[in-house]
Image 1: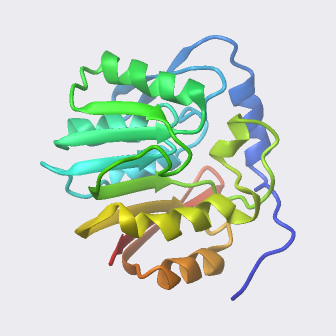
Image 2: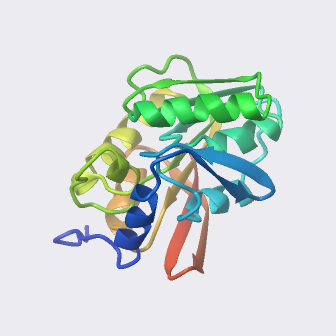
Length: 219
């Protein structure tokens, strides 16, 4: 299995991080017509289009129980809830992100959603029809909580995600996993297969100097 070493940040990432860190007060950014509020210290869709790409390609969530790991501002969860999900659970390891998602749920009248602190599935209960994670695609070590939105040292959390996900996805359910070909795709595809998932569809697009991918996985 191919492993890229050493893992480094993509050339576009330091500038995006600098812009996110420049904000000392909450601000809004438009995502497909919705003014998403962003709190300082939360990974921002104003400077990263991967969340928008995920929203543009949401699977059918009508009447389904959905879970988002690493919700950040809650942008993916907000659009999923508005698209007809029966129940939307959004979790993150960043307390600011949980608060950010809670605020955006309130701003857009999301009554079928809940958000709370959790490292991957640790505090999650039940099973879901759709599990989503716009995962960090850098394998380097994050220097602070903000960088957890884009970096995961040696993909430790990604590996844990695929090991645990089979217990939380329903038999006919779907996992939508966001990544990039700037990351170690062969390593991740190996973990997908090792944990009993099948790639039903894979999307890829280039914008603003970098690539985003979506894996649609079933068991």
